[in-house]
Length: 160
Image 1 (cartoon, rainbow, N blue to C red):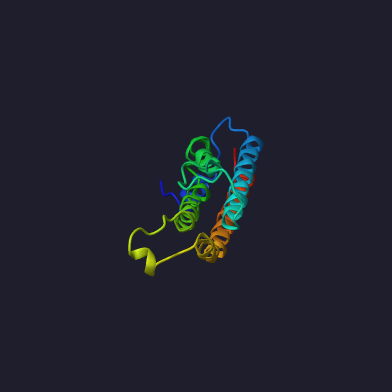
Image 2 (tube, rainbow, N blue to C red; image 1 turned 90 degrees about the vertical axis):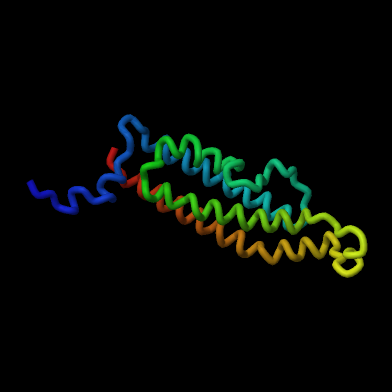
């Protein structure tokens, strides 16, 4: 028997939701994950602007934020087989890498000894440096949100 490519195409195979998975519940999880990400981003922006925010609200590691916990936990179990789901990992990691640079800039320790005479950086100067990365952070966040939109659309169109 000859099988055509269309019958076994990855899109055909990967567009199926696991049996018993409630599409509306999955979509609700994705929307909740998006909201968690947007909340994280608003906290990150507030920190960059100089607002005092508890550090636990803006985890640096991509596996520690609320979105990351969903993505590597329940999301992985339900949707890990989908290409659109897998495409989220990279933009999410990039986002946190950018935030880590911002975090390190804001929380740099003051130079010690003679080096502080030549490399003196005020907390205000560090905040200005951190703000330079804000557009990059927002861009990465928008990429992540667009990737989540693609996942939502794939779930809406999935067989299941």
